Length: 339
Image (cartoon, rainbow, N blue to C red):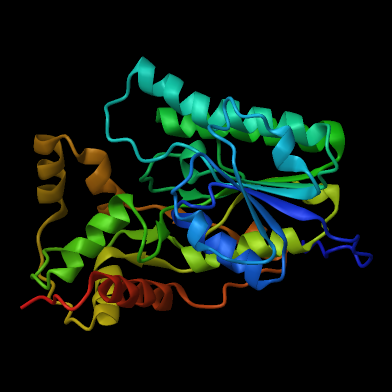
């Protein structure tokens, strides 16, 4: 059921944006400023690239780590919070120290921000969570907002715990508090598995993926940024609070993804078949089962509740977003091309 924004829009204050120098944050920051929003950008330390963004409506504050920072200075004039900062890409094996690191950066920092929001004039809190908060990186089930919460990694557990702080903010203070659960976010400047896939695609080498037909959901960084801008535009009623899966409506198999990516790069698809069991064997032998499964296994997301609740429609289809990522990746890479 669609929830319309309130017709009487209060005078807008500033938006506090954390994680604005990271991959998603850079795109969200540009999108918010393009919409005429005034933004307070909290950065951990100087030199993260924020100094290169010159805009009259941007205020940059070097806060240090959010786990220990003096947060009061960040909330001056702020009526909405977009919390993107956190710890995500860590290649170390699961252990107690890693669990503590994830909970400190993701759960504890979010708890401190929501506590500060309780004593401030914040009317909306938007938290970037992850699909990992409720599921593994591959499943034959369709993942939706009604799926059981079964995080299988320290990262996912820390994100689910962070969501609990956001939910309490809505329950106790009446703040519109929303956690977004995206799958893999795609963009030319993405890290992690998407960065690896782009590097492989850019070689132009034949890739043995044409037999892989499992469909996966993704979200373009442009679509995710548009969704966050939509939530900031509000105001929406308190009943809109909650955790939402957010993904592009289409799901694609890996051959389709590589074909679209290489089309944007100006390269031929050049795909050939190899049984999936071979990928599984390589993953087992190299200890990269999760990384390989995150590209070859199924993961379909039903994000219809978010789309209908906020009357949101991505401005570009997923295939176009993938091709755009490929084009921008090659542009940033420079004149070197595959032979």
